[in-house]
Image 1 (cartoon, rainbow, N blue to C red):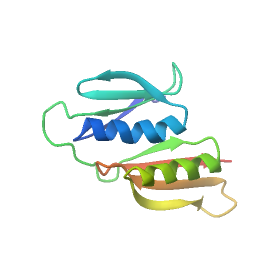
Image 2: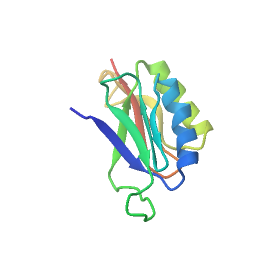
Image 3: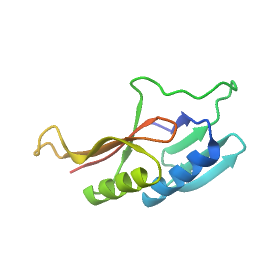
Length: 125
């Protein structure tokens, strides 16, 4: 149902390097790049993820209550992507672990990217 997700950035180069590092671990690569945005995808026809300089020329800001959730392929991938995100400038919003009880099957980690956008990486078993 979702075609793509976009978030704002104030520094396209920094944001691009950050998402190259973590999305690359998930098998995504840059599929489109212009002077004001970058788009990543794993495969044609899958939902895309993009970062943009705001169209109106104003400073990008974080949406209160907005979070982008990236689907991992395993708990190990959640752990690895979270660790990589922290190592390349993210701020932790919740270390990897079971959420909703050990038997829920939901394993997730949370962080904020260099622009302050809240990102979740999760695996559902």
